[in-house]
Image (cartoon, rainbow, N blue to C red; front, top):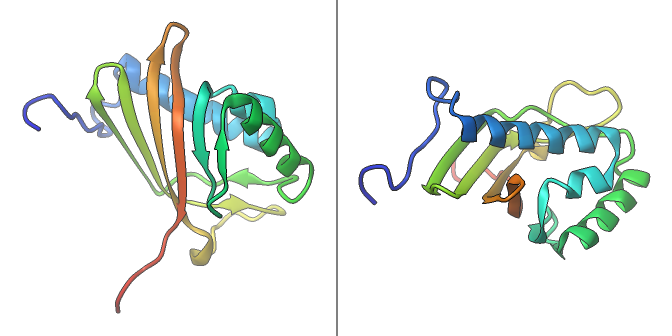
Length: 149
């Protein structure tokens, strides 16, 4: 790809309207997690979203995602929150499509402030511009594994 076909966000150009909107969407998603609100978490996604969890669970659609997340928030994820990512990349393959990658994120439990290395993940989200603004349409979460030595 050449020219502006793919544009990567940096700290110096993170002020564009679309970049701010996507960072706000990510913030809303993290706030919904911290609040234990499956519906609010799912509201950051399109109705037909595809979501792949860190354990490979494949969830399709906003309604199913809200239900599955609420079950987790009411159970094993109760009281958890997401850490701040170590790194964020944001690219716009087209003006109405964005790819947001968050690297070095973990689920923090019981007042923890620091991620354990074995808990770190990388998430890839695809967002689309809708009539109501940006929404995530895909999500893939993968545990980070350091290869070699």
